[in-house]
Image (cartoon, rainbow over all chains, first blue to last red; front, top):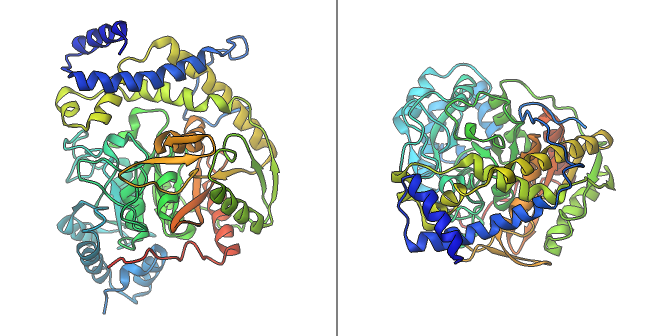
Length: 63
Length: 439
């Protein structure tokens, strides 16, 4: 597990009042690797072509 | 001579009560007996309410489901039991949730809580506070999830209908694995109070039935409106080959193609821009929305679910904002596609239900966790909030698979009509099939 990730995760969990084990951290690291893959996909977005716009999920999508 | 009554479908049960052919009390007794006799191996309905069911029956209004027993997923608060979401904890206090009220007002009788994947965080049903709940078609295999208990109970003829939920495919996927019809309704098309899915922008209740007509009856109750039954003999169907068809097991693709070919519909390949971003956008955003439960709940979860919840706390705001940009674009692309076609079709699951002991699937791209492969097939409907349905279209190695249709906003009636047409042209071979060795 990456040491900087472990430090970051421990701080976040401690501030949230959550006790975690080494096994927890190992699995969280695995989950986070998947998340990082998703983030990498999203970071390829050309923000000029994907403007930020409010989404109202309770309304039908419009073209 | 009432033991066979649970074998009737939901609408047949409702019609028989309405005509006086059977008494609702007899049906309830037969259903409770069926649950006792048959669910020990399936564990689809781990909490059964004989007393509360009798009270519901005594007070049941003269609605379309008058006196008909159903189950409901552990995500809905009931007046006598809070929602546990597949955990040992009451996460939403006991109350008459919106889903409960809609069933009650239709005259339905809730006989029990449907098992589900722990915390709704999986598409296999391999983990739950209530224990594993196998697939009725093969007890060694997953029922799907997270609404696996709903799909299993309907497939095994324990009840004629059930209510689930769908935040990332959780109705459509188990419906496909268990060989029943499952429809995710349009987002926010019924009151969400007392429903665990109220905490995300992706979740919608789901209706399960043995066939389209039965699932329609459940959906009509949830939506509190009748759905038109116009035939769907002529539809324009869009097919997005990549990734929805290209990375599925060949036998699954063949069955879905055979079903589509039999319909006589106008089927053509289409493209939908930005779909390659759907999985990443949903996982980033859904994780952020789901968050992490309080420490006592977290401590009681299985290691994998606990890790998922903990990892949710590590979501970065810039990534969530990018996920929203992608979601907005995907919503526009899907809306544009549905200008030219009536529905979009693809296999519900890329492979049949994997073994409980090893919930992975082998696809042309390699061996993947079933959750990853399944959610790729389902998340777009949650990104847009539009209704989606899974229809049984055959068997691979004795396990059911399904065809998924995504329809326009609020067009549940169209999806049920399409599903019924598929059933008609396949001679109901798959919706009338019964799992073996039900006991």
